[in-house]
Structure formats: structure tokens, C-alpha cells
Length: 255
Image (cartoon, rainbow, N blue to C red; front, side):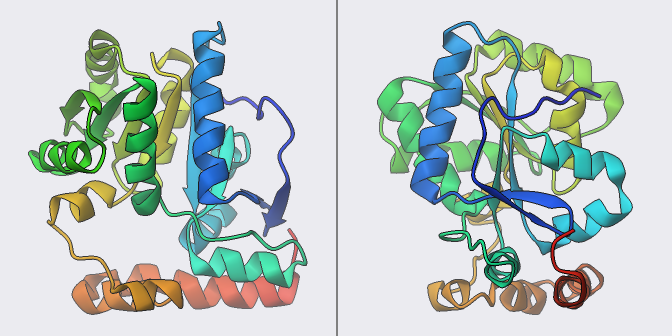
């Protein structure tokens, strides 16, 4: 497994030992743009971007490799109001929540403006194709280098990487769910033929209309998790991470 530290120091805070960079969504897009320019200027290795939420932090308590994957990424942004709340408690608040779902359309607009090529990997068969069409509507002129469902199975890695290589993509968005998507990028980072790879979770499902997002008010006040639990009751076990996270942050503070 290969990981590298960020190419320059970022303003970061650690929540239970997991790094979070204090970035706005605009700064995140600007940072990704710079990473792509760095690649075109001769930087060889793909750079990983992680959108971290309380579930990530709790998984990282049990999985040292996942924690290393996050902490060595080029950029780690606060996806989840629980993360924003924790950084306030630690006295180094993040300026805003930066979700993968909200960032992807902004990233598509960057790619359209700069001529970067975007590859969508993951989700159920056919979903990435619908998401790609929606992104083209939101970002006229966007070049979709390719789409493929595939899977995070190690046996498929070589074939998937060859698909991406043939597509000549600049940015790779991976929707295998956490932690599979982050670990997939981390394992293959040194040989991924793109400038930037980012795990986007359910973003393709939301863009395609396969899943409905919480109303804006619920997202604004940090209750998107409650809406998802209502829509998908089977997620209740995963949601147990939220109170556990809150208790650990209150009791332990900085990891």
C-alpha cells in the first residue's frame, strides 16, 4: 500500500487521531485544480482526496490502515456536521461542511472550464452513466472520459486501471462506499493514471435520482443522517457510530 503526505502543509485539525483540513468548498476545488496542474507539470503520483465524516473516524479507530489512508491523503475535507461540530469543540473550527455530493458538480464545472477529463467509477450498473449525463447538464462542455461500475475486488483492479489509462482521465471519482472506495484508491494510488482520485460515496445515486437527498433545511441543520435513516432503516447499525463518535469526542477530545 502506498501513500504520500500532502505536498505542502495544510491548516488541519485532528479529530480522534484523524486529520481534517480546514477548507471551504471553494478552497477544495482550488486545491484540486492545483493538484491537477502539478501532475501536468511532472508530478508522477496520483493524489487522493478524502471526504471524512464521523463514521470514517470511528472506522479509523479500529482500522490502522484506513486511518493511515486518510491521514496521508493530499486533502481531507469535513463531510458531516459531526466533524464540523467536533472541530468547533477542539477550538479549530472548519469553515463549512464539504460533502462529496455537493463538491462533485463543482468539480465537474472546474473540469469543464479547464478541459480536464472526468472518469466515474462505481455504483450499480448504469448509474454512473445517468450521473454523467446529469453532470454534463450542470457543467456544459464537460468531458466524461468514461464510466464503469466494476467493483472494489482486488481481482478487478488491473483491468479497471487499464480502462482508466485508455480513457486518459485527469480526475477519477470512485463510488464504492466507505471504506472500500478510499482503500481502493490508497492501494492503487501509485499506479493510477490520473492526477486526482476522490471517493464520492452515494453521489452518483443522488445525481441519477436513484436515491433522494434530504431537504436543504435538514442538510443545513445537520439532520441529513436522520432522513437517510428514515429512507433506509437498514442503516441503523451504521448510525450507531454517531452517538459513539459524540461521546468519544466529548470525553477524549484531540486524539
